[in-house]
Image 1 (cartoon, helix red, strand yellow):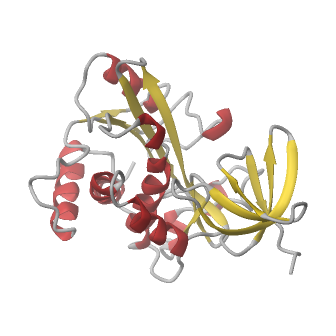
Image 2: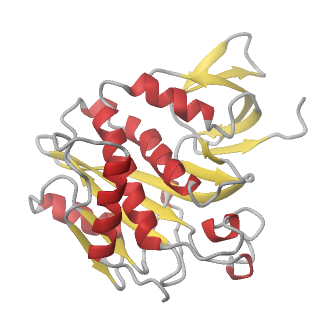
Amino acid sequence: MNDPLSAPAIAHALGAGLRSLRLGPDIPALGTRLEIHEAIGSTNDRADALGLAGAPEGCAVFAETQTSGRGRGGNRWTAPPGKNLTFSLLLRPDWPVTLWPRFAHAAGLAVARAAQAWSERVPVQLKWPNDVYAMDRKLAGILLELKGSRTSPHLIVGIGINVNSLPDEFPPDLDHTITSLRALNGGNPVDRNQLAGAILAELTALYARSANDFPQILEEVASRSLLLGRRIRFSQQGRWREGKLIGFGENGEMQIELADSPRAETIPAAETIRLIDEFP
């Protein structure tokens, strides 16, 4: 590993990011308490265990490699050791639990903002609801999990980013669907500690705004949307439907102009979403 994850280096980058964003001392920084593991089953599971043990909000768990990493829908998340960035964040939002899913969009935006610094020529986009893309290829994924109890819930935000893997290192079955920040950076290595600190700073800024300023966050999400204005196919409980994404609801739901309906519908969830590029 050329740049092993380092708590002091991440903290330094986080501080620089907070100053750059001009966040005042009244906004608590996320990630000031963190763990770094050489190997772990799942960073989400570890962050959940910390939450159950009463750990404070903002704890972050990083790992050089995961043996049981997972993504949305139970999909497995794999990454070669020391190449990419996988971490989870423990949050205890003081807003209604029904609004917590909003943070999937804010977290994706935080990753996109930070990653853009290493992808100057290629826009970093968001694929609803929880993926980060560049050049129509997946760069990162977000997994939100509501954990804890009814009386003491907490939110786990898992983030996985392809950072320094090169195209010839991608799994053969995925090499045409994924990319890495290094590939977008002209093949030049990306400092993972700097990236981690930059993401934590962006997460801090957007978390502070997610309850009351979410419409403004959604505007920026829409400006980075990979799917907005395009024809898509999506599945719900095994049923495939087609339509055009025309906007987002107040909590980030898809607003779809459906091919099989005379009116637009609000779609809060879908298992799979695919572009239909051959549609006009």
